Image (tube, rainbow, N blue to C red; front, side):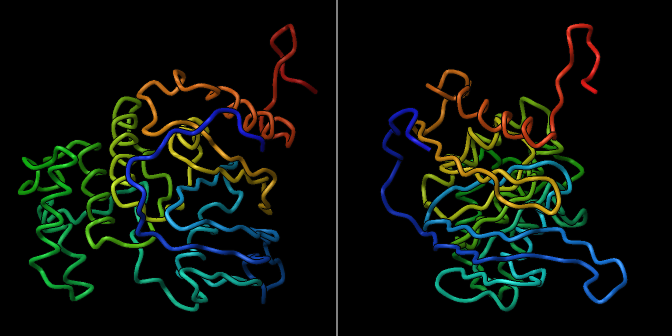
Length: 282
């Protein structure tokens, strides 16, 4: 895509991320059964070190399956996945993952939920706890550290899960609809918080979302996927200044990026208009 607007200088110039490469990757479920289901077609993509990349597409197109394969949590049927120069043959360790469900343990406080990273990975507690407190402060969550999930709002719980994903300073962050259960205002705040945290250290991010506006608001590039079996039908370079404005519509050419993605969905039959009488097309 040709540049629609000059990109602004990002905060900081260094990054801690590593590249991700997919080469002709596909996924078929039930390959040994009578009715195999092909969830993903041939997928090839490269994500640069420290890049924020989103994948958007209709429900059931294989977005989450793609992320799980990159994380090494789901075997691929064909192709190669390389993260940080190494083939993915088992679950990645240098990764932070956040899902739509915050998955916090009810019987542990917010800080203790985050410190699970240190316990499971057998990392030294001191540096991880110091990093956790730094992240809690950056996300305005200091008062929540000793509270249990039931005592926190949905937005606060999702921020805690974000701290948990980032506390060990991974090279790669993967997120699957992390804002999906939040109300509009909370989604907006968490989006801005995520961008601010990402700009500080620049891990590589693979972000799965249904929200076109959210993808444009956060990403350096966006891959648009087709209905199942999902394949990439468009790759969009988002050249908007960072940090992105609170009201994304204020960013130059924001609407052009959003319109391009919706036009793709319309072309694929994912979206349908109505006629002059208000009836859907035949």
